[in-house]
Image 1 (spheres, rainbow, N blue to C red):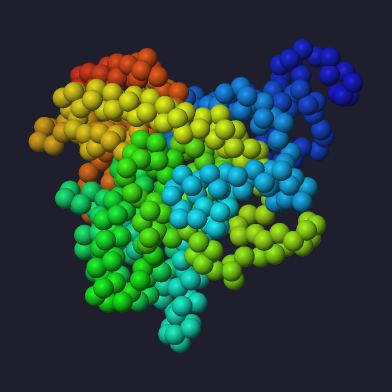
Image 2: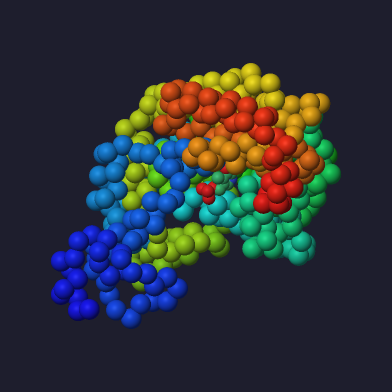
Length: 455
Ligand SMILES: *Cc1c(COP(=O)(O)O)cnc(C)c1O
């Protein structure tokens, strides 16, 4: 068929809509843009409804002005700082604002950068810790063969990646019923002269709980008095660093604690920007070894850069700045408060249901987890409930806790801005309905099959 005849065909009567689409090989011939659009659009339509995804921390809604800014900035490449000096300047404004928000002693003297998200930000934070440790050890003429990083067994996977990719031994401190998060208890057993740092998490991915950064720092102070080891802290504030300043302003977890050398956050989590933007800030220039910073001259100008990526969208940075201007501290506080209230409402609703016991109650970030009440004999699991809820469109994952609590299965809800009380009520109704269904049909639920998918 020649292309001239098929471009007047009605929608879905055109070649590729009315015939199979080549999927695994680049087709020999082009197709109409309308056809290609329709195919991609329709396939993407099969993705879930992002607003009902209570598994993710990442922003799924921004307002029309943000959408308009995004559309105006699709083409901006953040690395082209010479071409887009204003976007580069806006990146710096955002960094200054965050440094001030996180109580840097001298916000203008901090160093930092935007990233694609917290994963890249954590890699950079980890690399700075490693290089600092290496440089100090070299100066003393001691070995740099065996760096290790100490953190909770409940760290986000990006830290496991960091250790794997950059040859650092991960030292995981297990969690327990008494020590649900890394809290400084028993920390000494994991730290030695090869420890490049300790990661403290503000908003543990598994449960949403804060790790007590001040208490961890105090344990490290005592260790330093005893051994002379001065171990820095990196705070992984992927979600909490944009929650705590507004919901728990009295809580010292940030640069108010001297031992905290760097902090990261995901702008696209509670910074309320679409994916992907993250931030990392070092307390002082001294915390970021200059040997990690490259100067590139081939874009015009002389541009220092510390990043894993080179080219990357600039638009999310403009959106972050838009949010900072639009919301201010009071706006962020209002949004995070509303979100936290819905989370606690949901937590109370779930706690009131007989089969469930809360693991935590969304007291820190608007995230909480629950388990099946122990003692009672349940013929169904949280995996079954997760599957049933999925049929209603809700994504609410169930998973085992990390070492040493891997025998406990929890289910977790992440409340983001946009989950209203009304939707929360629909969700509680759906959970109740599915609990009734599972109780009635429990014998019909094939227990091993649910396990098969999750291990
Ligand atoms: C989400 C998360 C990350 C990874 O962040 P991305 O922005 O998704 O790369 C790292 N650490 C914690 C604690 C997280 O919650």
